Length: 215
Image (tube, rainbow, N blue to C red; front, side):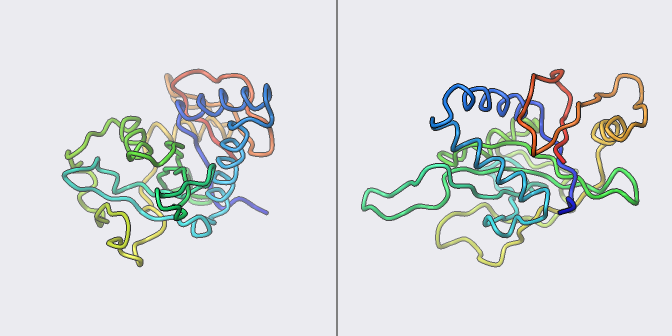
């Protein structure tokens, strides 16, 4: 199946996945194996445009939350969770991502994957916000043109909220990285990430600070 999107993984998440893969090799039956399988499922869904299959939904902003109006999440089950009364809860983990136009008119759009974390205490959103340099209660003027989806949980959540993030112009740093991946020499000082592939195990660490693409 031809990928509908290029995936670029944030450097800190890439390092996290490499460490996770190392632990899976050491203990294939350990809890890290479930996490690794879940994140691969999520990355494949984002690459193929199947976010609706994993309860995807667009994120937003409030004065009690960081501004993630340009982000969305998909939900992944790593472990089964239950309330004190034994009622099954939703998927245990979240994969947070953004979406951009392709590097050229004939290139597929780009999805940048920011975080993979357990949902408890809003950790996925805090981690994604930190990696984007954002803080709670501080809206970004550059996102004011985007429609806001009020953060909510439980029965108060709007069931018709959008699934995917708003597609935005590709930022210069990611555009330069994409040029390097496509064989076009990037500008001096631009990050040139190594190639990645969902079908291959994650290998040695890449140079810190460079985004990495999954195809």
